[in-house]
Length: 546
Image (cartoon, rainbow, N blue to C red; front, side, top):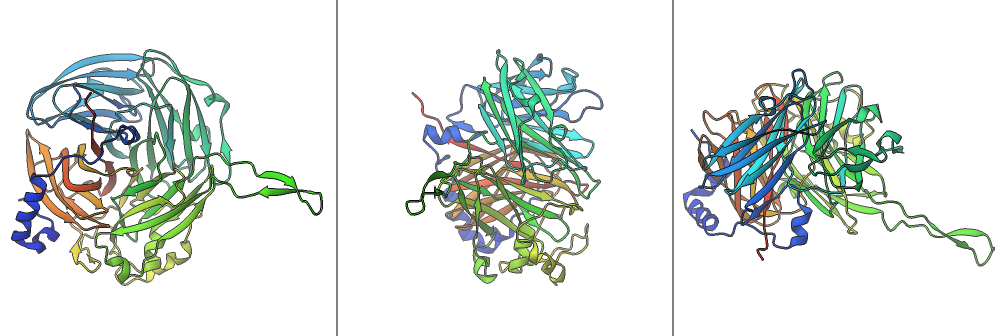
């Protein structure tokens, strides 16, 4: 039986009819300019392009490989479509195959069925129809899922990453073009920056994928920012982060890089609970400006004339609960930080929740905004179990408040979950006891989003939707040749809602989210073994037709 979100039940059947009328007659997209279109990666276009390419860099296709790679192709249209899938390996272009897509269908393709390789990415070109491509990798530490990319770039940035003893960080660089790409990689930590000689002017051969294990170049770091730039050609960059459980949590997470820093980011999906880690990293990729040195007119000595760095980023970090009135109930204030050029700040969101007295577990989104319009990059890490060795985080002085909170979460694995905040909306999803989920957030809002593939197991998957203005939203799941739903919900202005994907007999599928006002979307997954994952959604933008 399909479960309707409690918030919808509370507003009544009459209001439901109004919601349906609003959504069924609304436009499908909110973004129109080419400049905004170039910011997004990945994206879908409206109208659909006759030829669209999707790039899936990270994975392997050989027995015992680091990440067994599967590609999932969804055709959301009512017309059939064709997709051409080409495997790219570390040695160059590999096997190809033609995939026939029935209307409103999904196909899962293991790359090992086409070719065995220690490194195996894929390029999928969809002809006609309306297609979206995601992928998943199976590691010894768990499964990670995410959308494939639709854009290439000469720069990719990752705000966070981990290379401590429990971690492996794989950086996959795909070159889908017939010419060799030349690139360099720079790593930034809280204390240093490093550009390894082996990664200066390095190569990714034509139509191939190169995988770099970051820990071989910069090890024993709890937080590492990465910048990939090309001197020739363009690439697609994706990171696979793995935790082996030696210091706590065990899990894996896929994340595409950021091609263009932005001044505002929204990260809708997240839950803080007492047994896990929840951190936010804000990276300012700008280069510092050398202070201006002049002569003191009174003493004649050299002095600093202009010390303020114009590339300093002043950022605001806002917590977005399900119910915006919780902000005043708990006395929540916006946190402001200064992030120096070439540096990052790490914020412990769990400590922030304890500081304001949130009853745990607590669902919340986060918005990060640059006050002075300096472009930034963000990452949000959800760790199902606390790591024993952690970096020095901001605002940790209130961490002990969590242990004394009478409303704190019951022991791991107990699904008797308290209600949240003043709206008394219960958590419908079990709490993860392990696993890793990472998110780079979204820099633009849209009225239509698609998740090409996400795992579903009972109430294991929820779609988190955040909105700056009130939005009526419909969520549908494409599985077994048809759409299930819609699940309907109203998202309050400056708030968020979570929609459980309860589709009996379905282990996964594509998800379509349509709203009558611009929203931001992510999915939060808790697997049957209580591992967590965060899966990004793909926005639809209006393409100018000449």
